Length: 141
Image (cartoon, rainbow, N blue to C red; front, side, top):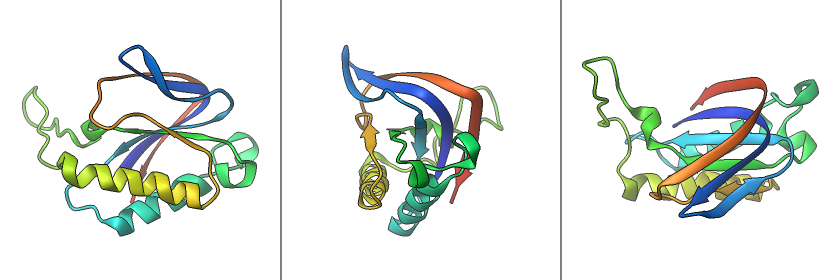
């Protein structure tokens, strides 16, 4: 499981002209990709890592500040571009495997007390964000 995590001052996800998830204060935008070998254990580890990730101002985390997270499923993180010009998606989990694991990350974050907004799985989404810093990291478990 991997995530591109950006520290943002605000972020939103739109589907068919409707905002389906938004954070309007400093927090984290999480683009979350699921590998075909990932398990519930990976989802728990990812949620723990995201909640405690100390990349907010003064090396704080969502856990320590209560800052929100916007989690957006992003299978394209597992696109392999080493050969040719067209990405291979063989490492990305199939939707029926990925969706429950994305939901598990979100649920685990909420159980930890995090405020979490989400995109919509398998939807054509428009993601908007104001990157703070800019500060963006790759998180893998």
